[in-house]
Image 1 (tube, helix red, strand yellow):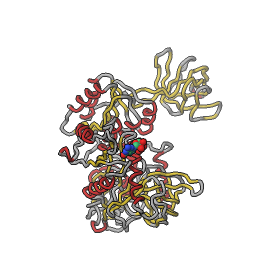
Image 2 (cartoon, protein in one colour; image 1 turned 135 degrees about the vertical axis):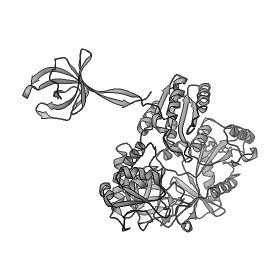
Image 3 (tube, rainbow, N blue to C red; image 1 turned 120 degrees about the vertical axis):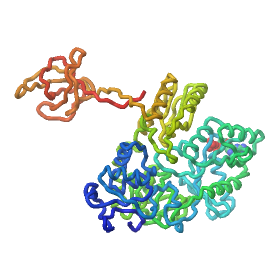
Image 4 (cartoon, helix red, strand yellow; image 1 turned 180 degrees about the vertical axis):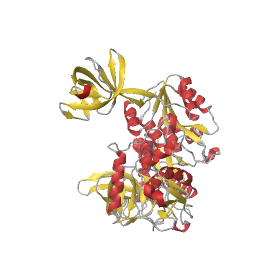
Amino acid sequence: MTSNGRPTAVDDAGKAARPRKTAARRAQSRALVLPETMTVQYLAEVLNQNPIDVIKQLMRNGIMASMNQVVDYQVATLVSTALGVRTSMAEAPTAAKGPAAKVAGTEDESELVTRPPVVTILGHVDHGKTSLLDSIKNSKVAEGEVGGITQHIGAYQVESNGHPITFIDTPGHAAFTAIRARGARVTDIAVLVVAADDGIMPQTLEAINHAKAAKVPIVVAINKMDLPGADPEKVKRQLSEQELLVEDWGGDVISVDVSAKTGDGIDNLLENLLLVAEIAELKANPNKPAEGTVIEAKLDRKRGPSATVLVQDGTLKVGDFIVAGAAFGRVKAMTNDQGKTVHGVTPGSPAEVLGFGSLPEAGDQFKVTADEKEARSLAGNSAKAHGTQPGQTRALRLEDVVNQVDTDDVKELNLVVKADVQGSVEAVRGALERLVDEDAKVRILHTGSGAVTESDILLASASEAIVISFSIGAEPSAERLADRMGVEIRHYDIIYQLIDDVEKALHGMLDPVYTEVIVGRAEVREIFEGRRGTQIAGCRVSEGRMVRNADVRVVRDGTVVEDSTITSLRHFREEVNEMNAGTECGIVLQGFNDFQEGDILEIHRQERGRR
Ligand code: GDP
């Protein structure tokens, strides 16, 4: 074990192994000591592998898991063995879950302390989310708290009966799910604001589904109670139709009447949030290097990059080396939501951090490292993993997504279902819900009428779901986001086909759909004789590009006469890798010397496509 309690490679005699061994060398003599459970990211770290490669290895074993998902020792061993690394289980359970995971039970209980809950406010537009956030802030200023809250840093903290509560200052389920889609779990409790004079509206439904998908407890705030048209009973009835039974209705969902305008009910709301937090037993260990999530980041012309972070475990201190995504640095200074300088930030609390060398992104998870070298190297790996597309994640497809392992070992296929009209939504939902299989089930996260939106894609990405659209398309911005985030949208016009595919997917039998994509075409204009009978085709690239070593077919009068490979691609005398449309080049094919003028050379590729 290292001093921070993490397992490390040890040899059979128990001596600490030198870090950064290659997998192959480890295999010869060493066993990697692993805890009972760990995140995929952690496993990648101790295996000294890129997390993407570990995820791929998991997929090969039929397990779909993202970086922050927790896998057990057996699964970790499967991956390790495939990489030539022997494993053994740590004797005592070791804390090795990500920052979002509950740490209780995985490390010395005596080190754990209760941390403040982190709350996000969700609800329909104009129902008073911003007003409620302001009202909560102001109620504390009015009470004469020292200094008051003066800064907007993206999150703030208030106290109720001496207990702090942290609020994320950006309300709405879009931001909530966008952060979740980056793999971070920030929110402990969602406050669902419903205007008492308006009732449940479309975005209220979305918010409910987003919170449920995140498995975050919901506290309802029935707002605008000061208005004469307030009808809280109607709101409660509507909630019951969404399977949110409030306490008056015999359920266990807490509902509080409030007015963001007059401040009535705010104290009651805060007390109830603490109650829910207490039930959730939110604990963390402040005596270790900090981990958490970036909530907001901005470039200040005078001060450089500044980021608001939420510490989720450990304590963040001035002077710490820190890495978040592709950004790293050393904490120069920290300020809290009241603009006051702080030197240490404990779990559940936010602070604005100065000292990053570049801007991290909202949703990036940060951690403190031992030194600058480690921070730089982790940032470098992250930049490589992200490529040029921040926020891009692996593709989830219907044919393999069902393999994800749920906690109770029942496989779940998460779906977001959109259809042209509400009637079709109900028909599709009804048919899908009837599909049952012994070890796999459909979980419908959200349904709605109308085109697929960006919010649907974010939800799907955050919850590893597939978007099913029936008799309706997707908004162009949603298509683009789906491409970027690797979310599959499957379009159907025939309900039987939709049900059939989902049923097959549940049984793990759905074959991927492949479509052919043309990479480039070139026309043979002239034929030259090369050495030893080799023919060189003088070509003009008519579309796309020609690529050396690519598979190519020779098409003559619409018929394929040969399948071959480009062994030589020349521009004048020079051997090149690629030639683009509009250029001329000389092409030699493997074992083919029978060109005719007018032949078309076609490079194609099979792509896993969308229906
Ligand atoms: P958001 O879109 O959910 O953030 O809603 P806002 O906080 O911007 O509020 C929308 C409108 O409702 C604004 O005109 C607010 O002044 C008003 N509003 C918010 N809360 C209350 C309330 O408790 N009572 C009354 N009468 N008006 C409110």
